[in-house]
Length: 105
Figure (cartoon, rainbow, N blue to C red):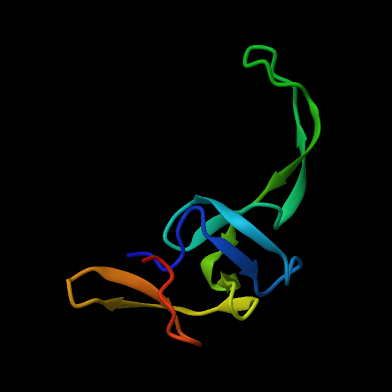
């Protein structure tokens, strides 16, 4: 079970975009993910008429390492660490380490 999943609201903890909040758009691999509005770069794109792609300079979100983001805790309004515990009925759930609140019920 992953501690951070697609669609989670996260906050960037380190790097150029420290403090920005966004949604996880895509999980690249076990260690990298793409966050909406964070780690944007300008890419010089060549036109490709066969694919219908226009040329120019586009803004693109690049992957971040999973250690540089934290799950946003709405109760504390900060990024928080996440743990995984097993409930009595056998389900695995994520919880915030600071206050023990369950992330997904």
